[in-house]
Image 1 (spheres, rainbow, N blue to C red):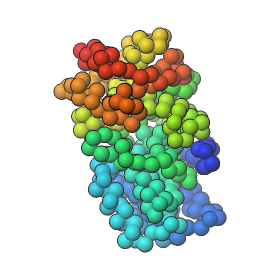
Image 2: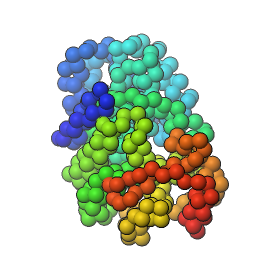
Image 3: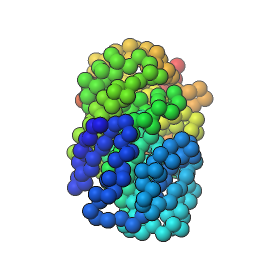
Length: 358
């Protein structure tokens, strides 16, 4: 069992990583000196069917309710958010209640936003069940989607703790493993060249990752994010580095339709695009062809899905949260673990996308 301490402004909280980490939940609540009145578990249909009983067995002595959302990005709709709020009210939650986010990144975003806005903010715990959630469960970003863009409605709201139980990863389908692994790669590229090298040397198949390997790469990935978040809690500066690959990735997700490609698979394409621009704009010395070959060997597609236009992608990118005054901002690399933010004009992006879409 590994425990990392994350500092986000005035908020400090533990991230506990290991097999059966969820077994520590009961003692965590019993040691809560501030007191709480009730718990609301927010999960989705897939996770609930597999693991809800295991979670509830650990907290059965407390007053609790459960809200089950649709699986995937559908959990992050305004309609689902409203239903979750209604569930909280109908079950008598108050300002001393605690919400437990039990699921992947989408559930963490939804539950965190419910916690951030219910009665102007109550506490919540993250219990992630996917690899992708190693990124989204720490740092305090919460939110839901609008049909015009991803995560455009949200708030910064830090959890009280994160319990990352590695046994929940055993049932993940290959697409979800690829989705989460993309964020691990991102963390290596922007903040830990040792992690990136370790991944290249040790991961040759995403279907045979061992618990010790998960513990190693997830703890290092979380450490990269924790280091960045500690310097910039509300994304006014260096925290934007965590969006490496996401500007195009989010645009692909929105254009193809949320749920038709996983977040991480879209982000990995965005990472490749950002690396190409980094090579031209920042003089990045990086073997992009070798990197792309490795990605293909472990199951990734490395090109933008057919049927998506560059005009549609640019329009989406200009509505991205990181865009300023309609100018698209990209996180690029000068070298591994040395990111920089660059404004890119539309004509340049059009030209690069034309090359990338070939």
